[in-house]
Length: 530
Image 1 (cartoon, rainbow, N blue to C red):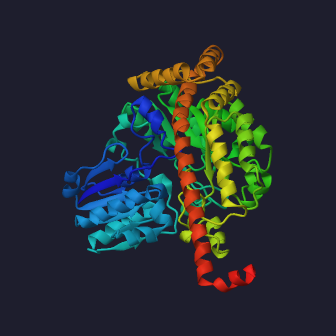
Image 2 (image 1 turned 90 degrees about the vertical axis):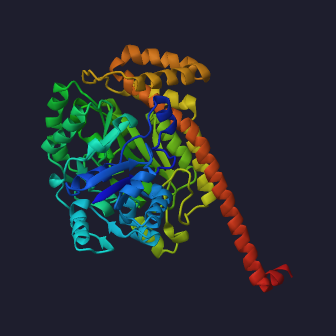
Image 3 (image 1 turned 120 degrees about the horizontal axis):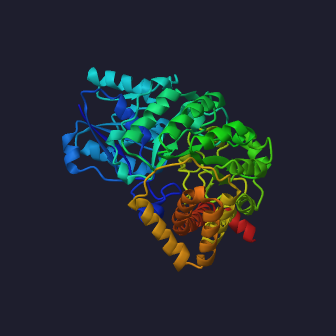
């Protein structure tokens, strides 16, 4: 079998870092870990070609060459995902799809015409698919409610990647999260019992990257790295000597719940293992909203104190914030902005709430008749919510635009980045990572834009000198975070324009609906006028 594996185009979003990548001469933030793991599960006698359309599109010759097209996708990629399915069908190719989006919304892929849906986790469903192919089945939907043992998952096919194109390479230690946040689809996809790989497995994957010469970021893309605290510590204790022996060849990032702040030993292990940044879903400083979405783990102690503990331990925080929860009080955007300024968190993944299909939130809103257009949300910064909120959508959106705009103004971003890094413990492992043209390009671009062109120039050089003198081991991380700001400084214009356009369209639609209702039933209006 000749199989063409395709990762669709990703529209601009919080996570795309387009302007930062442009400055560094890179093409994409990270590759599709799921798809290259699937590649490792396919039969050894298959011929495989891989195309990440964010790096380099597949060619027409690739389409002609293949017998089968395998496409994975997230919901934000649905437009290109649909177009790729249609192209495969038009060319007479068999099309198989999988990944988080088809798993959550299989009807979308079926309506688009995909022949095979390989859903849920591939360790169970890929063998089903292969058996169906072997028996000559023309179509099929392959599902498994059983959660696989990830200690049997093979090493991803990193060799398929153009490593020079990416900012970070992704690996995975665990699947699943023990919490039950109402809006989150992770527990639907992977369950509430975290399953982890063995330390030996993880070190084998990292060794492959090390031998391939990788030296930038490695993103451990667990949805909650500390979901199984015991196993996380076991892994970290073996990772530390591995990293030390190789002079910390890359920089580690991950995602974790805020209860990390309650475990000093765990934070210390993470820092000693080479982790420098952790993404945390803070969502909102409003306790009532946190209780309403069942995010009780964020109410056990002060959010501000918890963030400060994590930062002081030496981990930079990237956070998630959301507006639009039920019974949210006016001014939520301003309170989120104040919290971001007080903690100094540089990068806040700030979004309007979307009900993702088959989450507890989506099910509740569907039962209440509050979903718009069937509830197909995207969780995209430039999209208004896909349900009827408990306060006016215009009010929520205007607050959101104002907050997003101000937190990503260059001067406030520079100030809080500096203060955030000054709070951090300045320890980093001794490294011999090479300085390449990628790092030099990014350094020169930031110095030119923030240190010469913009009014930030005085503070830029002042803060840079202070970090270099007082936290020299953090200087590289500090510069990359400043570089990330370049994406947000531009992206806020796109978010504002998209949301204003959607509000205008919504207002026009509401006006038309009111007019249509008056024309259809003029008597009440006439009676009212008399």
